[in-house]
Image 1: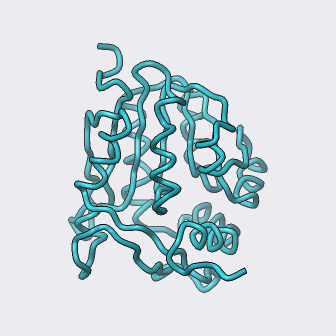
Image 2: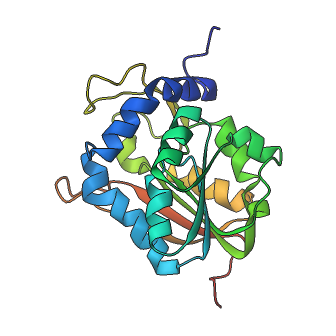
Length: 231
């Protein structure tokens, strides 16, 4: 099958090919920015709000799902890649093989206090479609929390406008192949995605990398009715 090189389909194709090396890299602590900054940043965000039930969308091999469960939350993880879900299930926890498109079609019947996408929103149409479904999966006052690449840092030398970018495994080991492309969004575009889909941003965090002193990521915390939980 001929796959468009800059597309949502190509992203999924790449993750199918790299499920095992990704699992190994995460579990062996090969990814410096995650070890130093972003893993703890997303955990701290959840500890600030303490939801009882969580849906981890694009959970990968399941590290965050398991970590939040250790913190006393009831967490379910879903991912489109069967091998990642298999690895996640082997390590323990509630995991299911579901795509964003299937979620948009109503194939995930669930209602939770919080939904998290931790570096799992790199497509275009799939992400935009998923956003239209988020509020239907949240309890009243539910939170949608997204950690992703910081637009100002991830932009690099390219022009600061939405568009597809080629992927890279720079910094990873040689087991990785065929890097996934990703769709770059400006900060303005991210904010619009939340606002256009009934999600009000209530906080934005910018975890700083201790070595570069630049944002390692950006974390958006939104609420489905625009009210802080508990108020």
